[in-house]
Length: 228
Image 1 (cartoon, rainbow, N blue to C red):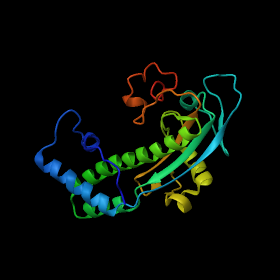
Image 2: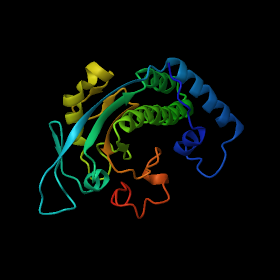
Image 3: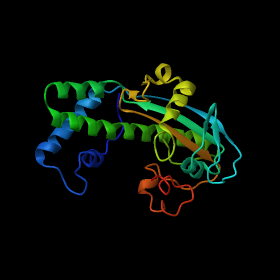
């Protein structure tokens, strides 16, 4: 059962309505699609926590980071995880229902409805992952640790190829119902994998992430400063 709070403004933003309100027809269609998605979604998540092993590097800005059997060399992730002692590897999905509704709308020639399903699904998976993130934050807090903003393969300079590491370490199909294709696409499409750093130092990182934080341009751990 999907019970996360869905941000309608995010759906509108995905549809290209940032800064202005959609017309009555589109607003009504958004609500219809959201209800259909809630009815058909089967959200699922799986995550594990591991110690971080920091390697050695001649470049202090790109330090090899090993989490279980995955080693990542990334300037962005080095910045994001600096000071962290552990990391959570997370996988989450809405299930196949969203994909079926999108495909059904496309086959019926309703491309507008398919687009709204796409946008609503994107907002829904983010809302769901936010809720899972809150649970992880609570569990980490009990151990005296604080969460950094989550970071996904394919973002910034973290290669998408690390999806294979997530698949191997988490057992995506067995434990989260996510199948990874040879081209690194996930099925169901509304699925997310992410790394969440855990640090003994509280940076007051907001759940919504660096993009909406007023300190993202100056914070030494920001994932935004070197994302492009």
